[in-house]
Image 1 (cartoon, rainbow, N blue to C red):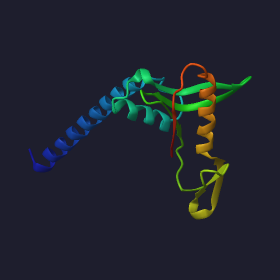
Image 2 (tube, rainbow, N blue to C red):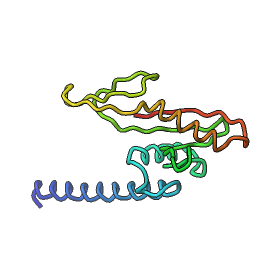
Image 3 (spheres, one colour):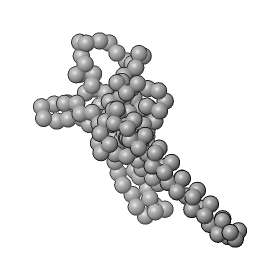
Length: 155
């Protein structure tokens, strides 16, 4: 067998093995994700966070994804992820933005800048958004226990 044919055969074989390995890893990740949530719920960034938590040995029973908590009559707060731990409740707000992000913790709105300043988009401050999520959770858990809450915004 000529050397080029042998090299081509080995390359194709390596590609097939890599594809099967990638499919195996993806299926394993989806099975792990299903221990907490459905694979179509929330955004891909939220599901990536849930997978990361699970892969770092956070028990699935303590992770809540795409949680809806009633704030007022008929109004709900959608929380990306919550983890219940021995030291408190961790509430995550996940954003998947690219470009430059401008804003301060106390400002109501932040600005995303794309295309070298040609595109600008305002969005609600994720720190304040998560503060509202925590207030809604505290109200629902009122009278059960004094538990500390921790806010984590990921973008």
